[in-house]
Length: 75
Image (cartoon, rainbow, N blue to C red; front, side):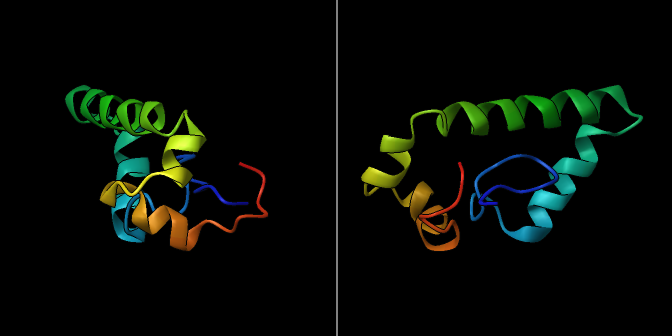
């Protein structure tokens, strides 16, 4: 709860359709698409590693996470 099933990103990181596409691209048969998607996913997950930064900053990249990810969820 609080994370996307497809990518593991915090809810609100990406719009739902983009999250689904990224999850799909990570499983692509095309090695270039898969490599690009996995690099993007790793970058996004690394940015979310410090939850104090995600939930305690005014960074506009994290605005939707703060709206969509319930504070009581296990993240």
